[in-house]
Image (cartoon, rainbow, N blue to C red; front, side, top):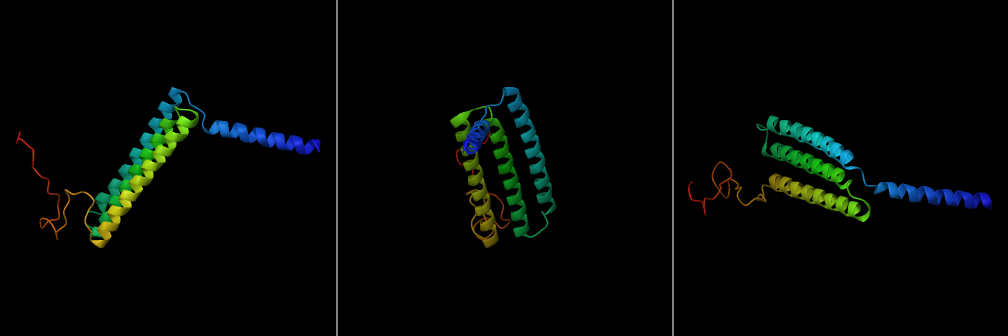
Length: 153
């Protein structure tokens, strides 16, 4: 019986210490290093996806849309990783809320990228109102920015 009690106590202690370590605040120098590393990794991932997108410039509209999607996902993932590392400067609930917000922004960016990909696949309207398709705008399907409110300077 004493052995069971010791085992339970050890398990509770291990879980308590493990949970405390999850929201442990890192030093500002650790956070700076981790954020810089995450930014570097994110920049490399986005650059790689952008290179792939440029390589697919002569491909079909769907291939280009998929390449744009990959770039958007790489950027969103990098932004999330950088934000997660920055959250390490906080502790407890503040850190947990920070990470939750970073995850929500990531999910939102993924949903936007998916919606844009789906629209490109179905020939639907783009989510950006300044971008037109050949069926609704100019014959080249390029962006047609407005000049309302400009002074011509």
